[in-house]
Length: 294
Ligand SMILES: NC(=O)c1ccc[n+]([C@@H]2O[C@H](COP(=O)([O-])OP(=O)(O)OC[C@H]3O[C@@H](n4cnc5c(N)ncnc54)[C@H](OP(=O)(O)O)[C@@H]3O)[C@@H](O)[C@H]2O)c1
Image (tube, rainbow, N blue to C red; front, side, top):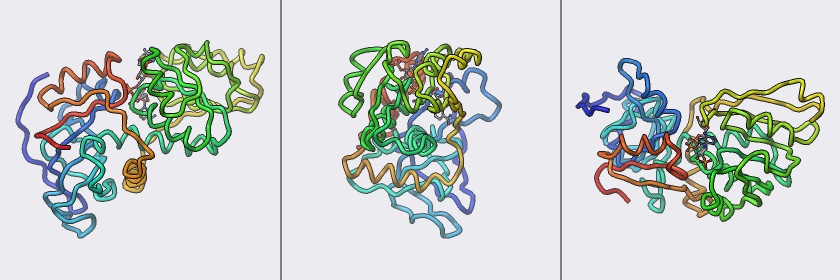
């Protein structure tokens, strides 16, 4: 990776200009860098200070601390963010915590809405030790779900247990079940193994392929059960993101959500951190800082 200076971004009338104090890369973004399209400016998760309010009068004034989910350009000193996709930060939420929230946290909230009521239901979660997985575990367990988490190591499982998981396994095949809901994001053989552990009429939501091997499912296997399984695809995207960001910030401020930050480093170490994220060496979120924010 090469560093180069880019021009200061110019906000549209409905955007604020944010001086970025912390930003967080996501696993999916690291893959975009393997064959970058011309003009690619990655970065969707930022926290910092509004230095220029939106010209159309929407959004907070200059001087406000915010977290934002811009469509691009967040791995930078200054980022433009639509006012519909920011939330104001109270003093008790640090920029480092806030930067860890947007994509992974919004995905977790929206996935759980897609899953329907989880209270008292058995939920299987693959890729559980990642950014999305920690949020899903804590929020679903707090809502009364019985969460079984799939993660590579016992050490990663220990934190997921503290966040409310009732069982930790290192392979879907070792999960006891049966499960009402499966949230699957690793691909390969995991969806088929998870389907075999669904209750009749249970739901598997597929939302990612962290293992980078396409999911393989033999639909004839479903004749042996579960009956009437529902398989659905999920994608988190859809502005506005501000209301979900505000929910996440409120949960963190109230001590009910704990962003799991496996790595914090100065932005100058971005290239190294991206490799570690891609190579599965970081638990939870990685957050890069500019200057010395809280
Ligand atoms: N559909 C959507 O809207 C949406 C939105 C956000 C994210 N996603 C996807 O959801 C997944 C999770 O995102 P994230 O940001 O939380 O990623 P992440 O932080 O990198 O977490 C992914 C987790 O999956 C596990 N994993 C990695 N490689 C694996 C492999 N080869 N086989 C099995 N497990 C593996 C790792 O846990 P262990 O090493 O502990 O097993 C890792 O912690 C990604 O696939 C991402 O692309 C989808």
